[in-house]
Length: 332
Image (cartoon, rainbow, N blue to C red; front, side, top):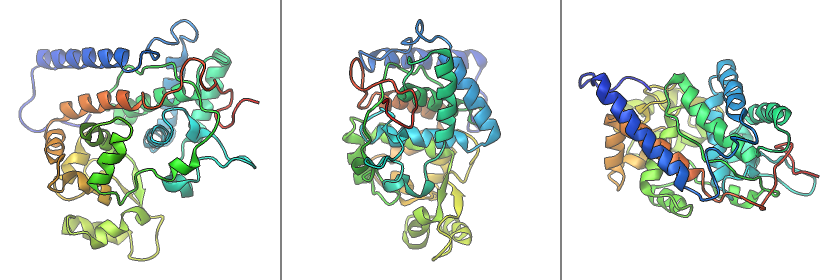
């Protein structure tokens, strides 16, 4: 993570104790989140899976720093449809459209599928037919966060998911969009069993990654709750018409670090999209934004805990679903 606020450097014993306390909490969450998921699920059947995933993700982030944010986005967009079942990874077929072209996924806004393919190929070589694409995506997401600028939090990922055999493009089209208001965001997260605190913590994923002009134009040109200086800056790269594909960082404070800069930006009116700034707009989660913006340790702990809860949304286990051999298509 980036530097702590300038309030004096904590003593090392305090840091170690705090880290140990967070580790105990996250371990308990990983054990209790889903009775059929376990961080040690592959300890006997595929003990090398963690190393393989981390090695491929490390190389992917070195090759393209955007890879970490891309995998994180895939995980969110997968879990928010039918659950964390890798349905997003399925390609279109002549008879069944997939989720990749639906709603906010359209137009290439989700990428990184080749990274998951690479991981799957190497995992299959080591442990054929054992590890699901859903679990590979969950592990890759954890590692992508931890590998971004070598500063993001880590957590024990509960494993044992199985893969969906059909996509759900209709629900993918209903993913929360960049113009969502706070009430809509809270309702969407509640529908997945997630709280406003989860919403606020998980939105911190926008500390990395980019957004296209088409997704933030309305906010920087029309909304009153945006900093005039920030809006002016964004308009230079995002004209009032045209230039839809122009990119800007979601976190203008520290765009290449997984830290609490996103929240510090919100507190100054520098949320890039309307749905970002809605988190700090005299609403029910303002206090959480202030907490995370001034206490990076609180953000890291809550983000990791909320990622565990998100990863348990709508999982397929036991005899449900399948273990895909190719993440892009169901087994024949």
